[in-house]
Length: 275
Image 1 (cartoon, rainbow, N blue to C red):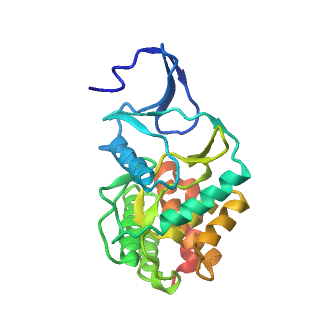
Image 2: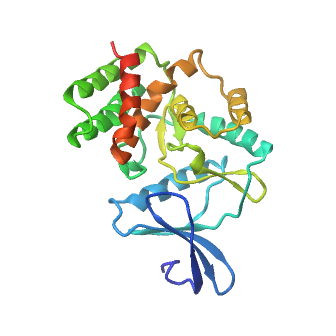
Image 3: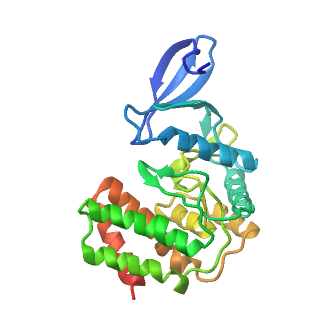
């Protein structure tokens, strides 16, 4: 049985937000509401990966995500979440809960399967060493993609690979934790009670600091979020000095997704951390 095809749909309303999928609010004749994401030609296992990430976060019982009701090759059907502005309590809960999720014990870096960050494939090979994982599965994978697209030259490719080989110089050793993986403000909403709901994950087991660094890349997170996070999970000294290094992955991904406007940031970070 397919939940979507069995719905007695009264009408559909387009929903704004996001640049990858067609999103709609579905209203049934019974008055029930659902959120539908569709893509006419999605990458392989695109919605399966999102479903897997939502389920992994939901399983922790720490942070709310929309319930997955049905998933197919070209769509994902979720529960509808009535939204409001995030309350101060919501920001505190988000910080505390995210820190707790990051501290859940996992045995290695990677994930159950590969996924996507945006529309870019995010490889998640099971790896014991976090430095090797970030170097190979994050920096080198993205850099080689950018080179193959003609977005960076060979010199910059080699410089990025050199930065990857020296990660231990700047980044402290960290145990892997479950990450949302694409934690910018657009992927955090508040329910009708002003409490946090995470959407659109690129879930994997990675460095907790990398998650927190990306939350700063575009801003939009309340100081209460960071204060509450650090009450639950202390950061090693010098975190703010190394956020750019973590975000090099995301700048490369945005370069691959959206083009050369992100090249300057990539070069700036490579020049700063290059040998």
